[in-house]
Length: 542
Image 1 (spheres, one colour):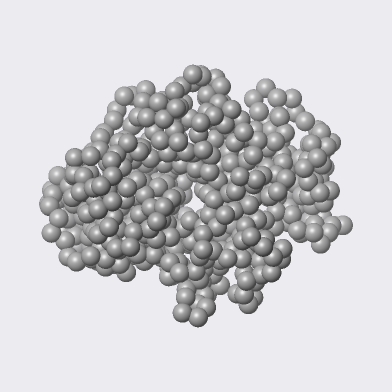
Image 2: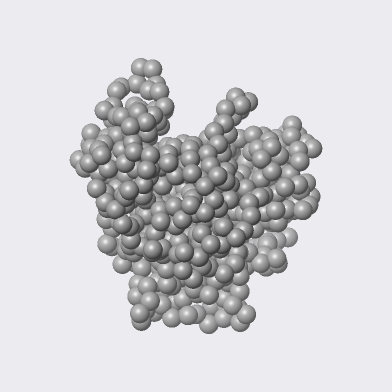
């Protein structure tokens, strides 16, 4: 047995077949729910896997998942792994031209999609020359153009419920498409063994990784249940799918919703006694705070042990507000990426005054991007990780050469995040190099300014971008969404607030009040949008 995700999942199934594995709760207020034990989820995935094999898809070919959250999403990912197909996430916000790009770039041979996307799929699929097999989840939308697709329910009903698959390998791949806010999306190619250790913590993200594949099931059989994982962002983003697989590797229960609705999230936490919630930054934590202070006041959240964020930080002021409402919960700002998996967790003293400080794992370092040598304490470099890292970007040798490198016998990945490291090995993240604002020769990282802005009592959310400036090269501009009912602050008000937390050159010189900050479905910042809003002629204050 190798470190193959399907083999590992099946070993857990055999250890605890009757334990509840996956719960899907629809909302709002429909009461619809589905519950599958490990044995039932295994059988459901087997059926889809055999259908895909019977349809002519072969090991190594790519299958896209163009789906909202649901049983079908994780069932199809497992089916791909069982059949040695490569699962590829598809951003469901993409329109026709973006879908054509992704379908082609990923060389999709198959696609499982929600009926709501029928029209887009029908327009894009014929332009992807390798795409030959479509499976539709749900009933086609009335009036939408037809697509040559098999109904998911029919595929599941016809598929063999047993296993009987060919031997698998640790080298089988898993592709995570990432990006799109600063350029076209890129497919990160992971060997499953590497993903198991870097993205899934080797079967124990908070403890000692397993030393053999067999040990995973042995741990599950020896332990009890009682942990419920609740990934609230879309499964199409790698973080949520990996969170679900962390739950499966523990032999525990995973709960999912179709979409993020804060009131329903809180009801589910209370009803299902959720212990671990994952989300993406303030964009998801703030609405939970609003609901707990308003319509869902008094909701029992005592079962929650942790709330973790990855992809965007929970700012200090927002964390403190949530902690006052749920004092027993542990709030974790985790750091990682689609290219590295997990790198580390913010320290207790991380915040506006000290910066975003991380206790990183032993495989993470801050290096000079030109020499790949470790930087001296206090010097700026880029975060890098060694060992279990991806093979590169699919269909993009140029970006692969820019991001992945070998040093001695080890493979490394060079992330886009600038950072410093101190003598104790604590890493302070400065921000994404691509978003860095150079103003008068000084470097400003948007995340630091955004934290200061969000600590203002009238600010609900904020993004920061650079605007060309004849004198300074660029100046700092802020796009702000106000709290409901808040009076509109002046630029002077915002600057005075920020001066108590930031050096003068980091203070926003321009302010735009927006009805709503635009983010991805998972809560990640859309800096292209922010730059377009603060561009000259946008009507901004300055």
